[in-house]
Length: 413
View (cartoon, helix red, strand yellow):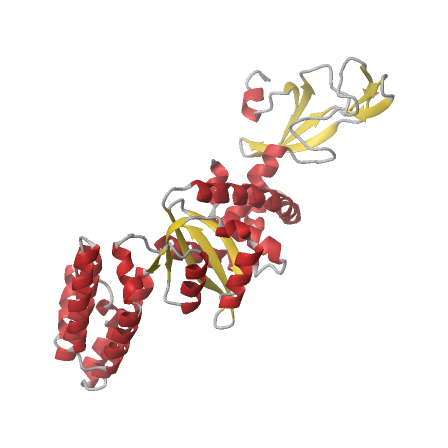
């Protein structure tokens, strides 16, 4: 069988194919020999006094699949001897580690698959034992995490006009939370710290002096007081921005509260129709289809109060999108608050009080137009990771897995 192109296919420049031993339905066995006839002594580093002393049995190494067949390389286990050091050793191949049965390419490819799914899925794809894939994954994660961690932090320190995003996600909703620190401009997750209380945040800043060396232009957060207090202490010159997604959520929540109030005054048929289509009240009108717009109009005709609060919600979205400058945004915000004052409903008035309390942080969006949209996307990825790994008990491994999951695109650089 012709073997002149198999070397390129296997991507193993240190070997030359000697012969094809067997081709079975799902396995391919290849005998390969080292191209070089000399190797350096691991003690003195010289190859001048190294001689061969025979060989042991052939060494079998699993490599990447070829033509959808499991590929096994059979290479000689050559005994070497250094006459200068009087040390004996075995020929060391670059493509496979010492005493390992899987090539480095096979291990890296398998780990990359496991990082994006599960060890069981990668094991099925590679036709390898799941326990073996899990062991490869556990061995690779710490080193890969450290490499990525150093890289994203160096990038953050060197970024001009750095914008940070800070937000929490639940381990157990209502009980346990983690806080993520993100580089919005570099599209990376910088770190993960346990908890979201102010004392926990301050403890992190004391334990990680590198965090205080950052020079962010702005920091995007939700309306949690602990985050704003912490950031104002760490970065007093940074612009603190209330995340648009969370702020808009308060307005949408008040619309739904008004909807529930109106719903109780309607006939059973209209009540059921309003309840079934209540989600049409949330998105901007220009994003709806023609059919959805017709149903929305029918909902708004049920009550002048519902229409007025919906118009108020639409005006808020327009204010976010169409304010050309901070000065114009300030005037527009005042007009929007006056529009809300005319709506006689407790939920609307409560939302207005919240908006007035966080007026500066909300309007700061128009000084630096950044949101935590990418952070919310990473939270979905983190939740999927937690479901796949059943909440890994080892904290360091859990943190390393999340950092790799959220910075996976950096592994390809």
